[in-house]
Image (cartoon, rainbow, N blue to C red; front, side):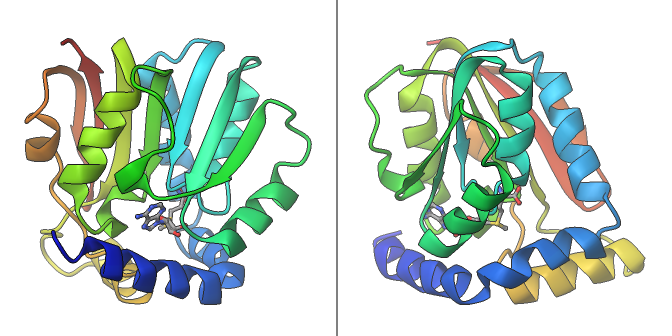
Length: 209
Ligand SMILES: C[S@@+](CC[C@H](N)C(=O)[O-])C[C@H]1O[C@@H](n2cnc3c(N)ncnc32)[C@H](O)[C@@H]1O
């Protein structure tokens, strides 16, 4: 954990180098990832207004979906890598309600209880120091707001085509997978949605305290 700053810099450099290739990954998953991102937004029961934060926003596939949904509100995407944010801007230029910030999820540059909802798709499993990142996510979330997560699990089960893809993905993107429900449950939350997918998990947690 004490090492998370150094590790995060390595992650940043990796994504800066490979930014142009990141979207190939979505192609490899044959649309499954984008389908799952859309489903997560629906399962969150996200309103079309308010302030929404997209953690590890990357090249902006989830951020674009959020901006299209939150027509009367604002979406902020944050990522450590400036090169993925450039692609995010190109992709989502048409959304005036989407803003991008370069920064670290482990030290969010926002005041307490700012956001109505926080999302993180395919990101928390690449974060060094996820406990700190979760504390930050719940700090900036309003009471009654939701944190919605989609990520690869650590234990991917028997080797089939999806398992193979997920191992390949983990190797390229330093996303080893994670089992995040226990991290989430360290906070004062209820969990209205938990989906245990074959190689991934989807979680929606509502902040109580
Ligand atoms: C696998 S990509 C996911 C991107 C996007 N959320 C999606 O659904 O496609 C992971 C992203 O996390 C970012 N990232 C990794 N560690 C980070 C940190 N500590 N703070 C902010 N962003 C981070 C990387 O730069 C990368 O863009």
